[in-house]
Image 1 (spheres, helix red, strand yellow):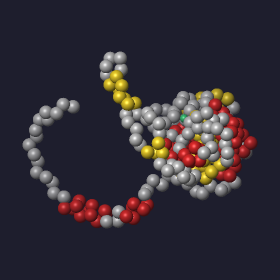
Image 2 (tube, rainbow, N blue to C red):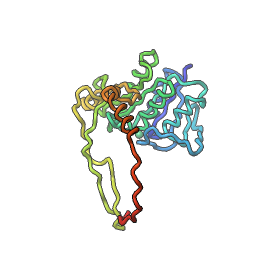
Image 3 (cartoon, helix red, strand yellow):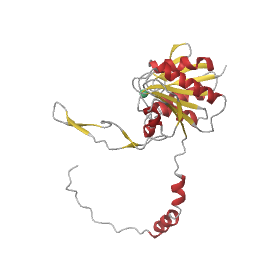
Image 4 (cartoon, protein in one colour):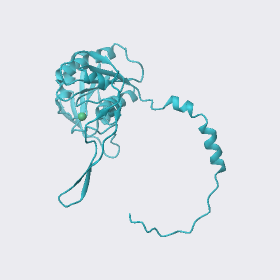
Length: 266
Ligand code: MN
């Protein structure tokens, strides 16, 4: 039976993970390999400077003292009885929409899957949503991936709305408007500290985006790839190469200036 790997970033005991694993059970042999603690917003981090330990929690259920991407590495590169045919990450508690996917441990697990050549999807549920409903959407997407409909080097990012699901829309990533400020506060000893990521998020035009679909009560299915090269910009910047090389060759070393003691406080 085909091996499916399920992981997440909310930790191995999260309700969304159990719902996703249960929903995929009839599509293959589900193996759960997930972080022992919550790793939300860990992005694509890997653990390279300490050993990873795997703890068996039950049949085909393991916790790892690492990140979602660590779990994917272990799962794909030999820990499981066979190479997985599909990696599913989630169901995350909270949406992973638009530009936010780059912070997401949930989506990064699917990115890692793609880098390792395994078809992958990430599933996230907006606040107040029902994991069982989200898992049903995830199973539909997983089935389409398993019949071979997924283009190469593509991962699927699924976001399910908080209320009843009106349907499923194919979308593109939306973009945030970054208008937030840092929040400065003082601790009981009068020392300042700071909060980032506060304030309500704002979004650019929603038409056709994942954010727009979820806002209107639809599940959003967004194909992503990891080619970060801006190909159009690269073509537009053709004159940079000769200009940079000309200035590199013309560069003269400036004469050494006598060292001066800095009076600036650091
Ligand atoms: Mn999370």
